Length: 487
Image (tube, rainbow, N blue to C red):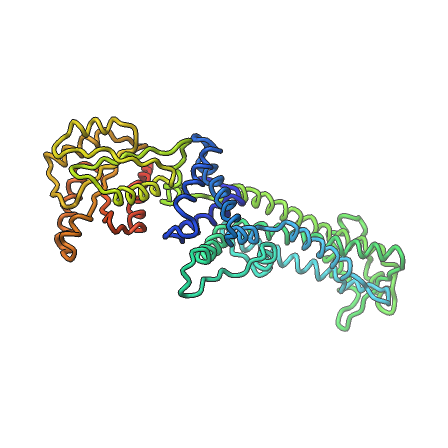
């Protein structure tokens, strides 16, 4: 696994979506893919971290796509998180706090039912839900709630992923749909934490706005504190207020009046509201503002960590194929045919396939044919520079003393960086036996058995009518890194 920052991860996901969807190489050709790998390798260097190479390659690819009016780069830009949306949400919350505390023309504050208490109750309920969720999930990431989902959609201007209409073969809409699905899943933990940070800041800003509104209007007019109730009497009201404003009392040192004092301000009675405003502001600061800012700080730290470390599974076939192209120059690939010479079309087909297998950054050459039974020439060919690819003909029956000896000589010279590849061309035998699938499979079984004896795998392909998609998958499996031992 490797880590990648948010911007690069999204670009890599976009380019991967198109390269997976465009199997026919119509919108993004083999030459385009080779150019992107070559340009990235030249910039980052052969010894750069794999994630740097993959990220730079994706950046170059999107730049070239943009010059061709490809819709994928525009989607990448549109789906990026817009920081100004979070700022706007916080500012709107502050302004709402200033406005929501407008008391009215009576200039009286009911100490039993101001907006402050509603705001406190809401935040305490949120803390309870967050705490219960953290305990039940044992700290694991949670699914986004409705508020966070709405904020993510607003900040990224995205809706639900849409699949292309049935019958559309254009790879670009297919890639856009795949990117939407994949990026929503990949970015969900990051965006959930980012939305949580914004919402915590917005809640704190709302409380600050309420306090600012209270004091701002209190400078110009005198507010009077009062209360009224159908069912409650002064002693009980005094106990409730002492409990509700306990944080503010602790912070300001201003005690709640006794029962007689509370009875004195019962409507139509009243008193100057300044002490009550101080208690309300201090209570909001301790119950809402400080906890929300701490929660925003924690969410911001987790968000920053996640934004810089989106995971990338480099052992997946797609990335493994790209990394085989991480070279300052082209990767030399040497095709060594045994006992037959492929025609120009077959050689071109094999060169294209091998170029794809090494990430498009390959220089494929075809060596002179090795004569039947000539093992010494095989050794000489193996000493030549280039990744060795042995080419056999399925029309020939594999013989241990000839084909097997040639394969053994080449296998002895293979390395971990340049593993031996075996390709068996089915074109000749298919031309002779077009409908005899049993004979074809029987001959494949003989070649597989011989390759197994020498600990290598064989790719069977009709070079006259190749199935590139199937051949690519088979080559990816053959060249996949060996799984690490678990200790």
